[in-house]
Each structure stands twice: as structure tokens, then as C-alpha cells.
Length: 502
Ligand code: SF4
Ligand code: SF4
Ligand code: SF4
Image 1 (cartoon, rainbow, N blue to C red):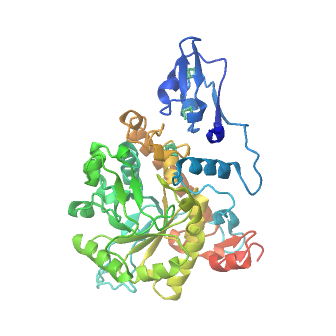
Image 2 (cartoon, helix red, strand yellow; image 1 turned 180 degrees about the vertical axis):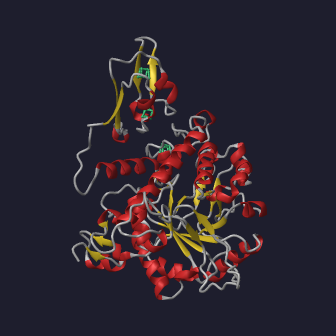
Image 3 (tube, rainbow, N blue to C red; image 1 turned 45 degrees about the vertical axis):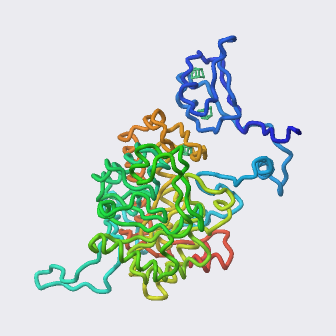
């Protein structure tokens, strides 16, 4: 047999002479990279197992570990990258589908947020100083009444549809218990409650301990219907129907049995030791009329008190799909772009299916406005919102709020090693191994999430102030505040913005 399947390690583990053989790195690496050689009384590394999660680098008391990308490279060229060659060796050895986690990493596809710049006021419409003047970041998500009538005493006569109220236009995106740990979920729930925003259960049900955080929880109903029952639906601030996910449009989900612990199986209401497979379609939804039936069944089950969100992946005809959803009784549409994260997805689908969320958002907002139904639904966008600048641009393109997923994981310590599918997350996030889970202290995780969202909200206020705008509501869909750089005419037309200099 030819040794073609041998692939040299991607990373090298460098250990300086300062190492005192304390073996902490050995204990902390769930991938079993570090070992102690009893014969030579020195540490060594099995570099083939290293995923560059940086855990050992951070915990080494003497900071004597460095992980570097190996210089041993294949002879790649512009057409055949080393990665492509390795994937072909892997598939010709295994015959299997390639799996990946986290979002699409490809650099040859545009990130439109980075090609859009924001305006600032100069002489007329002067800037507002957010430290001295009030700035409104609160948003209400849900259907808007066409008109509101009041009684003589000023009280509302019109009955308002159910809403989610957020102190700032940021929510934590769907991440299921099972894909992420109990402590990661608890961190998200605690932070959402402290911030006055919401986190999202994902498709894994709601652990009984987290019912207490219900007013700040969005409960999801996906095609697998894991953990869905009357109390679950009533527990949250809103119910989200997941029709699609940006990282894997058109396919279902698969949580392997290795991640189905006692607690995950009880929460999902599935037998222990089975894989949790959610089918690609909802087997009762084959048309907008079917979707409408599910929306009204969920409204009925929650006494018409909860807004219903429909989450879709950003795909080619998403504006038409959103138009149908906006007419089907949904209160909020969540659009997940092709750079969105995932615990595990087929690599080819993650990297090649779907469209950038910036284009999807702009076309959906435009279509709903043209059809006079923009007030039927709020829009939440997700799929790689990386900073407050992306947030500001998303709102100016028409979003009411954004979901953040990967950014929230990073706040909790994730180092984007992209190996969530192995269940060996050294940072205690994408794992169900009790020894690893306890590495993430929920109080600490929540504090860092709160810090992140507060920092972004502060930056949001500063950027709005710079534009002379004092509320998120006034920024929403205000595309005059945006300019494109290096974009061609069709891209600018879809985004509905002018080129810089115009
Ligand atoms: S943690 Fe640092 S000092 Fe301890 S064995 Fe590992 S490399 Fe050496
Ligand atoms: S997998 Fe992480 S903890 Fe293990 S050696 Fe690599 S960087 Fe260190
Ligand atoms: S959650 Fe954990 S396993 Fe997944 S990318 Fe982050 S550090 Fe790696």
C-alpha cells in the first residue's frame, strides 16, 4: 500500500526549555497531544492530534508552549490548494462525506460588511454625543399595527400584537443543548436575563433548570420536534420555527449518540444512545399554507401571547419566500446567511450553498417594502455578525436586530479551532464530557457575554451619534447612511446603496 494517506500534522507544538514537566498541558488537552516520556523524563507531543485550540498555550504556567502552522506544505497552486488535495486523499480513503464545524471560512467569497462604509455628520444635522444626550437602543420585535388608537385618558384602545422587547438590538442565536454544554447554555441564559435580551434554545429543547429564564428565552421548533411540548412552548418569550440554517440550507441536522447524555436525552425526549436526527423538511410543511397552519397551531398553543419567528436560510429566492412568510401570520423572520456557524455540517454544503446575508437582507427588506407588508414582520439577521460595525450596517440595511452565535462563543472562550463535531472542546463549550464542561464557569461566561453586548451597544450609540441619529428605529433601513466600496453596479443595486464618492 502506498503511504499516500499520510498527511503531515497541520500544526507543530513548540515547547521552550523553560518547561518544568508539570504536566498541566497533558491534563488539559482532551485531544491527548501532550505526553510525558518516563524514560527521558521530558514532555513530547503527538502533533497529528492538535487542532490549535490554544488551551495548553493559555494554561501552561510558564507560557512555554507555542503552536505554529507547519511549514511542511504540499506543492499547491492557485487552482489546487493544499486543503483541496488533503480532502481528496481523505475521501478516497474513507468514501465518506466531509464534515466541518463553525462557519464558511473561504476567503474567495466576499464579506459585504467589509465593503460597506458608514456615514458621519459634519455641518448640517450635527452629531449627537451619546454620553450627554439620550440614545434609544430599545427595540420591539413583532408585527406593527397600521394605526394605534387611544382612549380619552391616553390609554391604548388598540390591542397590540405580541412582541419581544430587547434593551439593545442583539440576541444570542440558536445553539442547542447537546451541541453546546449545559454551562454554555446557562451562561447565555444568565447573560440574556441580565441584559434584557433573549437567547435561543436551538432545536434541543429546554433543560428543566432553564425554565426560570423563560422571559428571556426563544424556544425553537425544528423538524425533529425535539423537546417540544406545551410547557416548553409556553415557557419562552417567543417561539421560533426553524425552516433552514445558513450553514446547511436544505438539509437536516445530526447530533451523534456520543453527545446524547442522560440529561440531553431527557431534554430532547429521545432514547439514550440514539442519534438525534432532524429531517431536512418539516414533514407537515410543503407549502406556505402548511407553514401558516403550524404558525397558527403554535399561536393557539400559546394563547396568542407569543410572537412566532420563522427562521430561514439565505438562499436565491429568499425575498419571495419571506414575502410568503410575512403573509402567513409570522411575526418575525430570521434570516441566516451562508457564513453562519454550526456544530457540524457537510463541508461542501457549508461552503457552497446559500447566499451572503447582506444581499438576502437587502432584497427581503426591499421586497416587503415594495409589497407594503414590511410592518407585518420584524427582521432578525445572522450569519457572521462579528462586531458592532456589522450590527450598525445590518440595521441600516433593514434589520430590526441581529442574532450573534460565533461572537458569543468567542466571548465564552472559544478559539475557533473548528472541531466542535468531535465533542472534545477544550474550552467546555461544544462538549458533553463532564470534565470538560466544568471548565466553563457559567457566572464567568455570563459576565463576559454581558461585557461584549454592553461594549457593542456603547459602540452602536457612538456610531449612531456620529450620524446624527438618536434611535435604532431611525437607523433601521436608512440606507442613505451606507456607501459601497469596490462593488459593481448590480451588487450596489441589490444592496440599495450608492458607491462611496456619490
Ligand atoms: S504545562 Fe508548560 S511547564 Fe507544564 S509540562 Fe506543559 S509545557 Fe511544561
Ligand atoms: S489541541 Fe489544543 S490543548 Fe491540545 S496541544 Fe493543540 S492547542 Fe494544545
Ligand atoms: S466551541 Fe470549542 S470546539 Fe468549537 S470551535 Fe470553539 S473552541 Fe473549538
